[in-house]
Image (cartoon, rainbow, N blue to C red; front, side, top):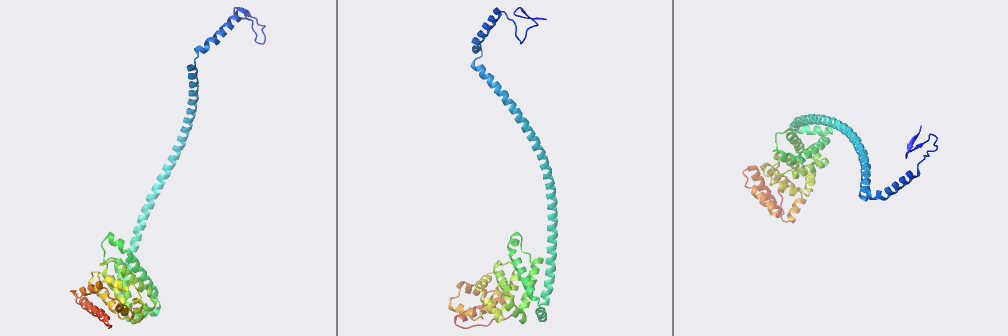
Length: 343
């Protein structure tokens, strides 16, 4: 079987891919190739070549973008799975948070109930102690049992905690004189006052309860004017009772802030606070060193003016005590002393 090329037959016996072509056909083919070589650059100009290159680059870019899009799609699927997991975990945590918040609210309610119960129990127990401590033999028995020191330590800590919480509570709401907390600390201060009213009790306070005495004076300084006057009165009475003891008087008088404290309390506005401040001042004037200090330096005109104002008080006891104190201070300027009246 034979094929035709250029009009000639190619024999079946052709080997190694060679074919027989007529010379005229070969020359014609050569001429056409040379013509293509001559005219092809004119046809395929630079713009076309650049366009081809751009098309090729665009195809490469398309493939790369396709790969990137596939990668991004896979990442989106991965992020979507993570998002679902995080949302599920977030929902779980939100439910746990709500549960914890409810438990916290329940705990806070229970804690407040326990605090109210403890305050009520403390107020009731200390009210009983206050009544019992009015008997001298009760105080004597407490001292013999050796448990009074721990009670006084707790009393000092409780009083300080209550007073330091007053600023926030007073700003938040008006003071409640009938609250369990107030009745509790009031009863504590009353017990301390009654202990100091007994000879053996004030001996013990004068020698073994200096922390309590310092706390009382510090708390009187911290309490703002007009705030819980009954508590101030009881603390002043306790200090006055201790000052009846020689050691107690010496210890109280050595406090450098005592006289400024008394001056501040005289401006409290409550007449009972002023009264017991004056009585404490009268007692302090019995200390040998304090009168010498007052005599050696001029008395503050403001203090004398305030005491002079109190001599016009409508309260008879305050009026009388103010006159006595004024006379004592004037006598000190002349080198004399005057013994204050007791409770």
